[in-house]
Image (cartoon, rainbow, N blue to C red; front, side):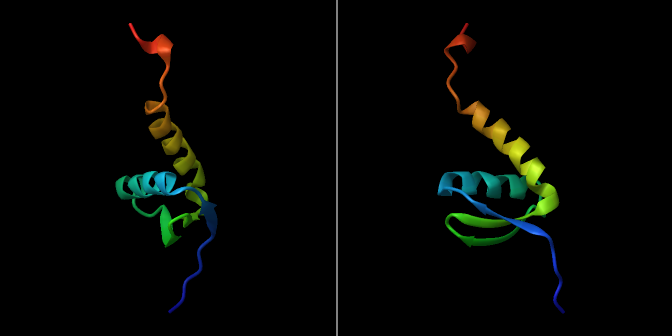
Length: 69
C-alpha cells in the first residue's frame, strides 16, 4: 500500500548531508529518503529542527579568537 508524505528536497554538499544523517540517527524520522550524495528528502515539518541542529553543530566548528581565555 502506498502512503504519501509532505517532504522537502534538500540539496547540500556531502559534508552537510552527513551531518543531517547524524541528526536523523539521533532523532529518527526526519529523513525520508537518501536520493544521492547531495540530495535528501526531509519531512517538511522537521525542516526547522534540522536547521536548528545544523546551526548547533556548525557553530561548534567555527573558530572565534575572542573565545580564548
